Amino acid sequence: MIADETWAPNAADNGLSSSADSAKSRLRQLIIAGEYAPGVRLRERELSEALNVSRVPVREALQQLEAEGFVVTSPRRGATVKQITLKDVNELFDLRLSLEVLAARLAAQVAAGGRATGRLQQLMDEAAEATARHDHEQIPLSNTALHTEIVAMGGNSLLESSMKPLLGRMQWLFTLTGERDPQGQCEEHLGLCKAIYDGKPDLAGALAYAHVELGREPSLQGLAGILPAS
Image (cartoon, rainbow, N blue to C red):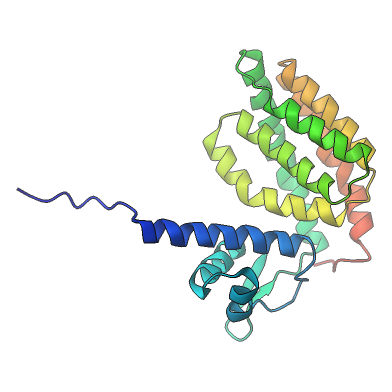
């Protein structure tokens, strides 16, 4: 009788994966918050002490963050925080114009079919509350969660996996441009969410396109004195 050699993760594997995911999440937030500025070297030993994990999950976290566009590695310097540029920001807006429009349309189709949940409305309420109290630390988090839910609501796993690495960079962008008319952004989100819940794919797609494009020029102007051109 041939033994079943199908691989299954053991507790050690799961523990390492969990530690790496936790380290990645915490390090990503520190980069977004500016605790690790662009160009700063990310030394495994120092990070393992700061994050209270071993160097192995830190190494894996750095590899994953490189794939997400937060970290770059070189033979001489090792890992450093990526220097985001105005060209990067512009390219991010280009991608958002395609992917977020599709996400909004798919979410509205789900709602039109009677399969929508209240999760999007809950996140919209939280984003509106953060905006009303001028919580500039919470607003980027809430807005990113809102965009994430619109993608998830559509139920397209390929779109969701394509957007996943972009959403962190969107939060980075939202944090860098946190002073940019948060009330106006909130009103645009309200209109977009209403179109989705009303089950109107064409309108939802048009509003998503307008929302992204209306944010491009103010973002680039606001970051012109902060980020290099390319």
